[in-house]
Image 1 (cartoon, rainbow, N blue to C red):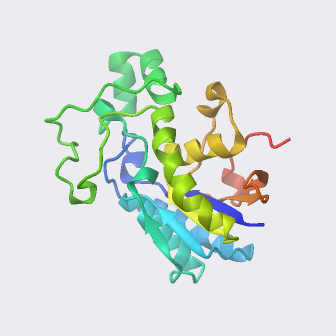
Image 2 (tube, one colour):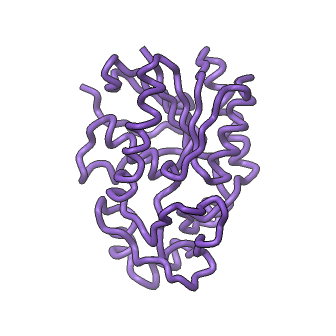
Length: 237
């Protein structure tokens, strides 16, 4: 049966600075690069050899995939990029310091924006320096103004069904290098996690999550490879 490997990008510069990142193209830090390479080495040590890869349009996820595949000696496998695997769009919160935002708007309000399932943050203003309307990679793409996790799932799921699932149905072990919320959306779908539970599921940076799937692509086992940085997973029983 196929294996699905989910890898959140390594630490980015805005992760380090504790800023809301979303669709903004923050790059990896040196620590993030090391996390990505270590993830690839752990996969290689486990004898895992994906034959197809997917990633987003964002540099931190793309470079994490490059570094991981290089560490596995599998930089040659096919890679497909798509905006539907991008991080959740944080709207007007993009670029803001998380602690300062909590002081300004209150911890409860920021918690709702960050962790509620279906309440998005305020929309990004058209004159924001973080507006991606003129970024060539998004030519013809309906760039959102802000997204909840629910909206993120609604854009990720069609790509999963139309493009990723057929690769897995064909028996190919597959790696997806993406983001905390786009991967959280996939985990919700695959593990059938309740709306009020999924927001508490954490996806650590640069730590491959290896999921064993049955013939219906239902998870039957799942483990993080870096045990020291593993997070709790949904119950498979």
